[in-house]
Image (cartoon, rainbow, N blue to C red; front, side, top):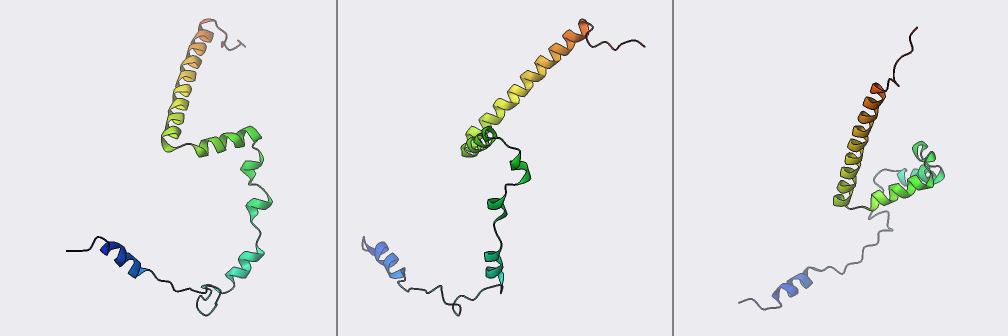
Length: 112
């Protein structure tokens, strides 16, 4: 019969206490020569200037993006459904107003 600590003993026997020196170029050669130097010389373009689409955003827009980014999947789906319902309601209201304008002859083209 197995001892109650048999699983723990087995896990402890699998641990390695070897220290690997990752600074050594002999042990960990650079996979693509020159890439590290090139990456160090390149500046992060996002840090220096925001993308063109972000330059036009106002602080309220950025706050909305942060808020939407922090939502869970379920909450985001709820938000999307709410926006779809709002768009549908606006479509119905616009349809009613267009019909009203038609009956009041507001949208009539001028006669030449």
